[in-house]
Image (cartoon, rainbow, N blue to C red; front, top):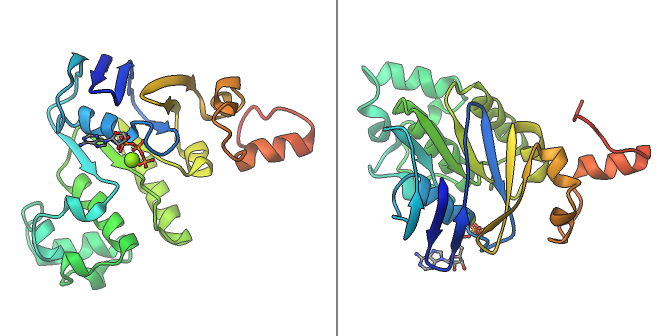
Length: 220
Ligand SMILES: Nc1ncnc2c1ncn2[C@@H]1O[C@H](COP(=O)(O)OP(=O)(O)OP(=O)(O)O)[C@@H](O)[C@H]1O
Ligand SMILES: [Mg+2]
């Protein structure tokens, strides 16, 4: 994104998503979801350029918005040869039992994972996931972490889950009131003075670093 503006929500931002995982963090209402919608071209910027590959898969903050069919099976049908293939695919994530569920009857966490799996089944050239860990149990969160890390395409997420962001992202942008106020590796960003201005509770890694009496260089 080059100097992208949208209403009074996104105010002249520049974002580059290379290989690996890029995260956008920031307070509620700071413009993260709007930025992701500009990236998927579901919103048109008032000014500036958005350059994206031709197939961008997406999973939204409200995962139910991803669904266009009534059952899980129907959602996946067009991407697979037959029912058995879908069962095997869902089985990889321990979700085979959901195949005949109505999508509106999925729990929030189930809906989130299924919506991410639909997005990747489309074989996109880039992937956008809004709040990938919202509502997920611990096991499911680990699964989504591994799934996103295994993607061979640029992945961009928006998240409030800073420990997840630290574990998973290669590059982080901090948004506040429509501006990018800091960027860099997750740890660099967490120690940035502009990040402190947001008065977020300190991420776990920063607390641990302080206990050890030093600034952590890597999560390991
Ligand atoms: N379609 C819309 N029309 C007008 N204003 C909108 C629209 N969608 C969102 N907004 C406003 O834009 C601002 C940014 O919203 P956005 O959803 O991008 O924030 P966010 O950073 O994703 O927040 P959260 O952390 O709560 O998900 C908010 O003030 C919101 O009220
Ligand atoms: Mg949002």
